[in-house]
Image 1 (cartoon, rainbow, N blue to C red):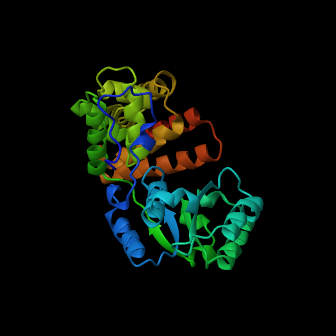
Image 2: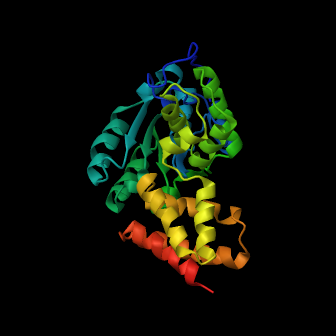
Image 3: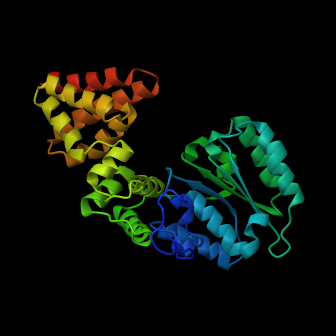
Amino acid sequence: MSDAEDSGGAAAPGREVWIEKYRPETLDDISGQENIVDRLSSYIEQDDLPHLLFSGPAGIGKTTAAQAVAREIYGDNWQQNFLELNASDQRGIDVVRDRIKSFARESFSQDHGHTIIFLDEADSLTSDAQSALRRTMEQFSDNTRFVLSCNYSSKIIDPIQSRCAVFRFSPLSDEAVTEQIQQIAAREGIELTDDGMEALVYAADGDMRRAINSLQAAATTGGVVDEQAVYEITATARPEEIESMVADALNGDFSKARATLDTLLTETGIAGGDVIDQLHRSVWEFDLSDREAVRLLERIGEADYRITEGANEQVQLEALLASLALDD
């Protein structure tokens, strides 16, 4: 992350949003995406920026990379040459016809010949809006570069993908998250224990934004940020709780497994979808045979699909545990 800003010592945790305070300002400051940074840097060095498509899960640097590209190309004037829109706010064709086309038509960069339009969550655009965007990209390619960000590139129509250099961002490594959290904790004067760090990394699951937000939220009390503080503030189950619940179900003790699940949902306040995510992440960390792991993955997939389709979370999770307990 960038060292351009200095906190000036320990700061009140709630005074400023840390994900913005510590957002990298240059490509070199971005953690965990070295291959992508190298490719983007080469485009900038050659002054030959194509349209870009950034794909990957949340909190791993897509928006940061887009802003860093603009900063490095335009310097202090980057905001005058950079339009950022969130497609999930306005999904229809009007946002393309009005905001995007208007900016592309009226904006010209005297030094670089083009401006940048950054469209975040572009996979939220309707198919008609994407078709209109494709035509706009063709019409204003001489003076505008488009940077599209999405969670799923498969939801972007092929004509747009074929006009972009596609970059697939991966979840950040535990090492990258740990390094950044240590830097922020030191600069903010936060006492962070080793088990607190492990809990932050586990709860983040490769999402730097979630890790930083969790650290700031846990630090608001002014006390030590330890494992208990992190799991409480993030409403995340401890890995051992998930493992115990699955082990009890596999051993045929459905009542005990269901009691653990009930505690997680009602007392800890974890959403059913988050329980599913933690189950899926932890399958290969459990001491399970290959057969048991396959059974668990099959049940997780079925429950996840039904919950996504609108079924009751607790009923589906209890059914998952019951099926594990009844299987031979």
